[in-house]
Image 1 (cartoon, rainbow, N blue to C red):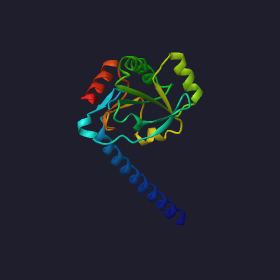
Image 2 (cartoon, rainbow, N blue to C red):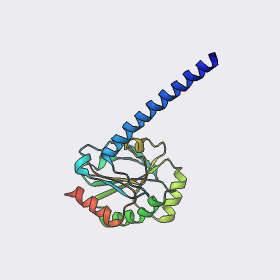
Image 3 (tube, rainbow, N blue to C red):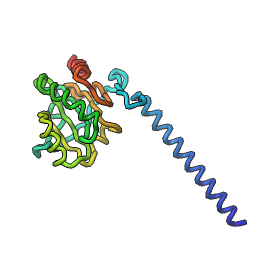
Image 4 (cartoon, rainbow, N blue to C red):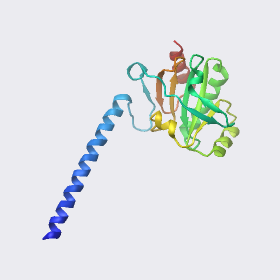
Length: 189
């Protein structure tokens, strides 16, 4: 009899915990859907900057592949920043990097590309970049701290930061060159 009562109490405790966790997850989902729209099949997601972003981009300092410190706020007042979170194992990330290279070649006077690699080994990243011949700035976020600050839950994720240091747009998923140019042009207005 005591075993049955004990078992019933354990089941009730588990049921309460499951209910609490489910409610907590639902709140997180509701917050997420207020700022982004999710689509099936990895479709691209673009968030309208007018509705979501009117906030300053969190500053950070990371190390680039040459061992130099790069600080986001150093570009404030100077250039629009194309901030991209990526990894070499991510096919959509790799697909958009050639477009990023063309943007770099054509618009480097007005746009600074900061491609933040998330949680990969420096040598692996260097090998990939050298093999592909990319020349824009590659930063290393080996602990994922900056990605966490920017709420990166999927990659690639791109944020466009205007010359005042304000986040103007966010895009989750791969971008093509035309989409990149459109987001940059909107930030330059």
